[in-house]
Image (cartoon, rainbow, N blue to C red; front, side, top):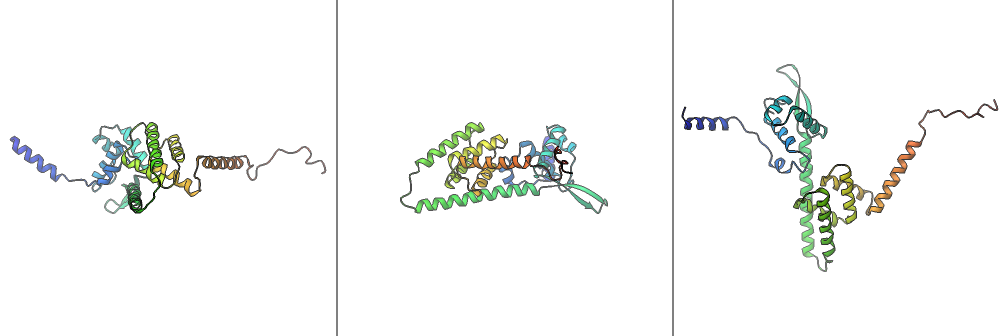
Length: 254
């Protein structure tokens, strides 16, 4: 077989071997939802076999990748723990028994939530831009710009990397929502302490404080102290049905 025939046969085999449809939004935003490169590749490998083998073995996945079997097991376990991947049961009429399959509903929900947040931010920014263009006698932007620059500097030092333009847009949204600079930095500190450096997690912290009407770091610390005192009281309270040590005078008048 000459070289031209080999190339033609390969090309035909390549294009008729099937394709896997992967949403572009997943490829461009998997990092934003906390997926690693390995976890994304595992999801793509599972999608590759979805039609013929909805529950490929971990060994078969490891055979296709450079990661070890233990690494694959750890990654799949993490995906299931985060509900980005689920293991479902279905009845096979052909085999007359229950079988397993992988589900991607959690992954789709996570991407949909991220898309909704981005869309909401976009609409909010467009509305703010229209208001800024139509408003007169606006206040000087210097304080906001100064706060924005400081937040970018603090976040980049804490995260150890440059921020993306999309991440920086969060600062504009938070500041326009009247979150103080110190409160935003406090949310970052708590996120880092929890081992989570995701901007969506920081946004959830700020929104929770907003629901409680907390607008300063002092108010947040006061709320923490109140919560801690309540927890300590619950812990110190004797459990129902527990017996206390007998008093030596209990039977004095019997």
